[in-house]
Image (tube, rainbow, N blue to C red; front, top):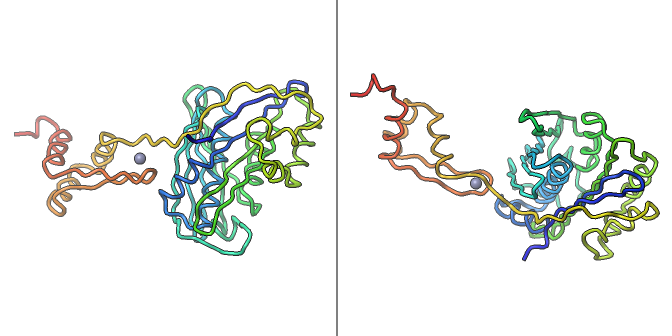
Length: 296
Ligand SMILES: [Zn+2]
């Protein structure tokens, strides 16, 4: 069984929210599906943890998407997560490896790269904001995003380890956010600890869950665990959705597919499932798209 989970907690004495996410298993699975080389796997793993933390900060079951885009070799990636712990994603180019070099988003995703976050609001509308990539690390860019776009004092740290074969062996993150009226000084103390490498040190202690953050929030009172959810890789694609995607191409194009390829194949970028539609199915779709008065 996977130990992947998303834990929500509070530091009631200082009105800080704390989220801990271990997505090692799903990140490993996702990077494998995308055939990521080590550098691409590391960034993808960071984004998966990042989107789970960002979604976890949302209310109820809102979805959050986190995208990176730029003119670098990896071109970018897309991840989409929900506060219920489900996540999926894909990379634009997974065949990227810079062995022996520290991770630098500017070199891999940029130059002129940006991070964009799309958040579903309780009323069903969406809030989108983007920040330029200003730091080699994804977690620092996310922190910057919270400072400028959401304007909520937030600090986070993400730690992803990848072996030489590109297998993710660790994908863990922590976020601490101030609640309205919460203690800014306490938050800044946690930020200082995280920026000094506190998460990696805590992880070396081999403790999981709420215990993992104890060294990071030391001196800030009791930690109160609210919820601990399993994290899962969930793709929402289906044969029906894939067919609707084909329908979007329009009658002429579908008739072309029949004439040219005797069918159509749609593949899901997230989970790599292939959906094949034969000529008969495509012609039935054309019939559906044809207004009745044009049908014989
Ligand atoms: Zn899929």
